[in-house]
Amino acid sequence: MFKNIFKNTSKMTTENTEMEQELDDVTLETNANGEQLIIEELSIEEQLTQDLAKERDKHLRLFAEFENYKKRTAKERIDLFKTANQEVLQAMLPVLDDFDRAVIEIKKSEDDVLLKGVELIYDKLKNTLVSKGLEEVEVRPGDVFNADYAEAITQIPAPDSKGKIVDVLEKGYKLGDKIIRFPKVVIGQ
Image (cartoon, rainbow, N blue to C red; front, top):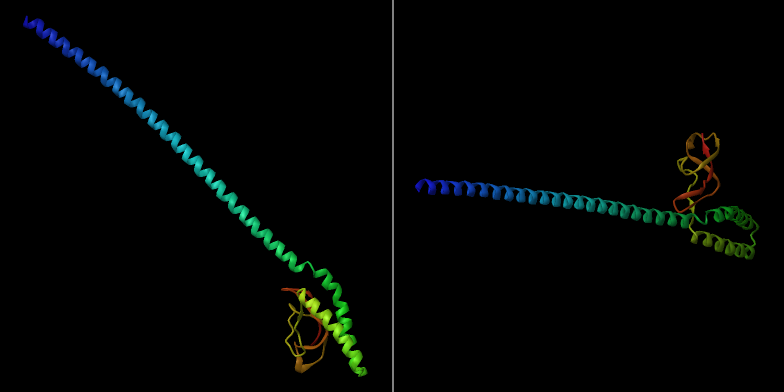
């Protein structure tokens, strides 16, 4: 009887152990499956995070590129407006030169009424051109010659004015920061 009970107990213990083993196996499988699902979910979540980061990066780069484009086109537009009158102003420069010469010659004739009338027209023309951005390039006799701001037409022997401007033959003009006509000068040698 003890043997039967022991056998039964032993059999039950073995069955319990087997059942516990099976339960542990199932739990482990469940845990293993659960962990795999978690690992898969994490990898999907990581993938989505990476995709989101890539899309954000693309968006930021596109936004920065667009901002640079806007700045560049605005600068180009401003530069265009500054120099849009360049051709017209360059065409008016010979007229301005003729007025300069006319005023000099009329001063020699000592006709004050004629001089005053021509000077009024000359001043009006000059003020209009200045309002459009035209500026005279300042070079005077005695200044040191700089090839960046003046054009040397000829050189004359002048020991005391070597490398200096002796005479200004034609005025130079600039539009904004850009020289549209260099002054023509004579320099000492």
